[in-house]
Image 1 (cartoon, rainbow, N blue to C red):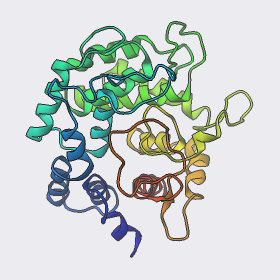
Image 2: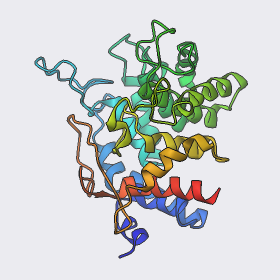
Image 3: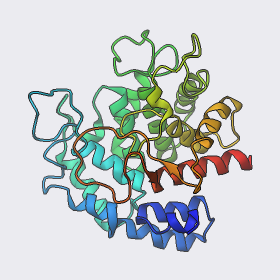
Length: 314
């Protein structure tokens, strides 16, 4: 079984993106496969997990239950990360079931931080960046307050950090990738205004100055986990996530991505697949079939191959 055949034996969320990004299938065939994401596999399962009140697992950022012994323990079961997953699966925003689910979330999900509706956002840039990606992907005009907050919390060095109160503080890889992904996706929906474009470019420069995974000061790697592949990414940064953004936002390529590209290329296994290296611990609503930490991954392989195709073609 060759690599494409293997990828096409996976979930509809994988298959339609393989068809679009790797095989250049006709648009009508891609659309037909994409339509299955809402009715089969991971996408259908995620939609079915939504509560009647519009939330997932009775919460917006955190689930309805709290582990008092582990107050900072990440859980991926609430509304925020469920909507992020649906966007990553590429579920069709125009499908009736999807539109109804997103509308229920807009009406029923409120942030634990400030009580605001989901599409008004909260304050942490890493959270707002993902929420803006969700808003732009699902074509929610009511997400414009998130964009305004994200633009207002950019740091002086061009990036973002969860500690947004001090914009003179150094930015982080994690917050910056979430923010620029959100600004790009919002621009695709609402238009790339000069203000938005300038802000995104400054954030991208923050990453490029660091070659996507090195400290600017001394060139060291701040966290080896950033050089490892992970699915889903949640709020965490890794080089493949960074490259997947630049594939979309800067199709003309920037040579400062070259080292990160070769880092990913070197991970390719003898069978042509790429491994899933870093599982982000925390409860999940369900496991994605065929995605196991330490084993070859369809999801990682799809993302790595489309990055390499972009880079090498250019």
